[in-house]
Length: 179
Image: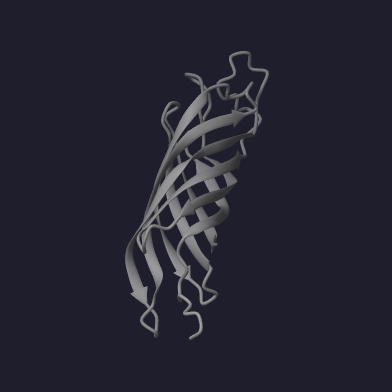
């Protein structure tokens, strides 16, 4: 007998995503100018699938936000202004809620919810010197391709930086490889 292959592989994985990252209320001092800030983000996750439904992971997220030259963030001296970025390490849990079968009876398309949290380190530190706490939650779709080890998807999240009371959203396509 030959080896029997799974239609959808589960196990340790690497997942990459990148796309649109927006902030509605970037951190400011009292009375400072704030406005909608669009940007981009990239993220990598390393995790493990537990059955069909659960995928805990650790991640590293980097974002860059475009700001006007009049944005001074939390700079008390006023010498720093403009764009800022952030790096955010953390942990996440993806829960697949509803699966849809293909013509072969294999659940390939899933609707899922994802919750994550981590630390936020802003850059330049002269503009935003404080450490922050990231809390995100959202939903997405994931399609397990016929290439067994790969899945693709699209995810939307609500993002909240708790200490600075900053909120925003992100929309990012995903690519996952299961080892």
